[in-house]
Length: 189
Image (cartoon, rainbow, N blue to C red; front, side):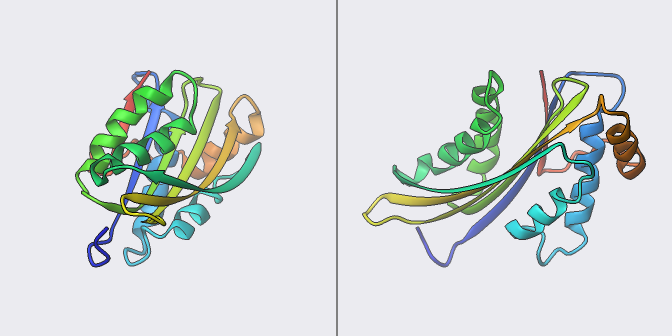
């Protein structure tokens, strides 16, 4: 990996059914994009993304896990490997379907050294699952190998809980779906 060509990328992805009305997940995503855009000098730092996601009110579950993976692969396979890590946190039938658009997005960056991916899954209208994956890529111990440090922050919002829905509407109700930003994808289930 070229130490002088460090590429850092971020992606927001909303998963849900096609509807005539915006999903709550789209409003939350739009608000988080705006929050992260406030300080352009720090908007791709993992800690900034983690702090923004932790501002979402009334989290039912919150879990943070960290792990380091050692992978040996050609440099061209790195975007696909990063996409797979991000998509697999969602699990279920969406994982393989999500990996392709994430990988396509990442392939534009050549050799990504860091990648933040926030997935808001509102497949069921009564719940929003938030998955933030922050990945950092460094050279591994041998030629052609990479060390990928992964931090995952996940939480679930239970919208069937009246207080949670009220809080989400109060905080994020004025935000519409994100515009067609190059770092935003909408995935229909």
